[in-house]
Length: 446
Image (cartoon, rainbow, N blue to C red; front, side):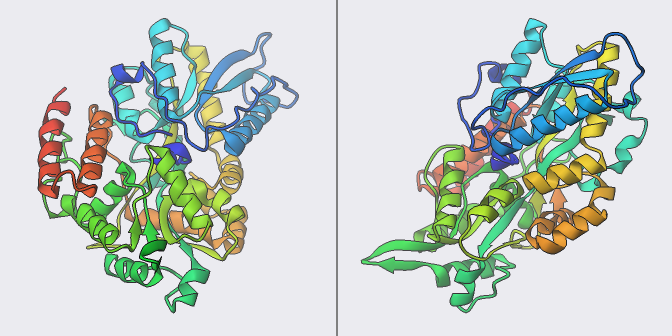
C-alpha cells in the first residue's frame, strides 16, 4: 500500500507473518530512493536530560527515503544538538517491510535498534511477539496530546506501544482544469454514482483505443479497505477472529471497479506493488487520467510536478464516507536497557511534539499528529495557502483503524491477490470472498 511507500504513505504490502518477514522483502517504493547519510552527533544546546560524562547512544531505524528521509536526518541532527545527554544515530533501512525484516533479524541476533518505525497494521503483531516496549510508564498520560483518530493503531491489548509519526490517509486527487473543461464540479465526485458519471465524462477514445481515463487506482489493500468501509462493511469481526467480507460490502469494490474498467472509464494500473502506484500518479501528472486515489504522503510531490490546477477531496461515499488511516508509528524496542528506553522516549516525545510535527507535516505532506498542531497558527496559515493539505485532517472524522491482529499481515496479501484475480476475470466475486474467508479462518487462528 502506498501509505507504506509514501505514507508512506507507503513501502511494500505488508502481507507476510513475522517469521516470513525475516527473509526480507524486495519491493522498493518511490520514497526509498537515495539513502541519506546518517546524521551527525553534534550537541551544543541545553537538554532536558541530566548531564553525564557519557551520552546515551541510540540507534533509530527509519523507512522513508528521498526528500522525506533527508528531512528526518535534519530533525535527528536538531534533536542531537539540543539534547547533549543523548546521541541518536539514524539509519535508513528501505521500505517498511524491509525495515521490519531487518528489525526482526536484529532482534534475533541481539543487535536491534532502540527505536524504529512500524507500519500501523503491524503494531499488534510486533507487540504480541514481545518485540515492543509498553510506553505507558514513560508517557504518563502525555499521549493525550495526539489526535484521537490517529491513536487507534497505537494500542494493543489496552497497552500503549506506539505513537503516531508519519501518518496518512488515502485521498482523491483531482485535475480541476480537466473537470472544468468537461463541465463537471472541480471539487470532484462526492459519491460512487458521481465517480462513475464523472469518469465516463472524462474518458476519451481515439481509433477505438483509450487515450484518457476518468479514474485510476491501484487495486491495493488500502483502497479496498476504504471501499468496504464506504459500503458500510468491516474487514474482520470485532474480536478479530473472523473475516467479514463475504457479503455485499465486501463484493461492492470489485463490482464497482470491474464495471468501470470494462466500460473504459477506469484504468487498472499495471505493475506489482508500488509500481502500480507510480503508474497511476504518472498518468495523473501526464493528464492521461483525471482522478486518482493516492496517499496524503504524495501531496508535496504531485503538487510540485502538476502542470494544472490540482485539488484533493474525500474518497467518495457509497453508503457513507469511510477511510483507513495509514503510515507508520514510532516504537521503542523491548530489549533496550532502561536508560536507553528513557532516552528513547525523550526522542519519541520530541519528534512528535507540536513544533516538530508542524515542520514535518509541511515538509512531507504527512498529517500533523497533535491536536495543538492542527490548531496552531503555523498550520492554519499553511492550510489557508495550501487547502489540499487540510482535506486529510478533515477526513479523519470518517477514519477507521486498520486491522492489526496477528495474522492480518498475511491475510491482507490474500485479500489483495483474490480481489486482483476477480478484477482480471480469473474468478468471480463470490469465489474471491469464499477463498478469502477460508484462508482467513486458518490465518487468524494462528
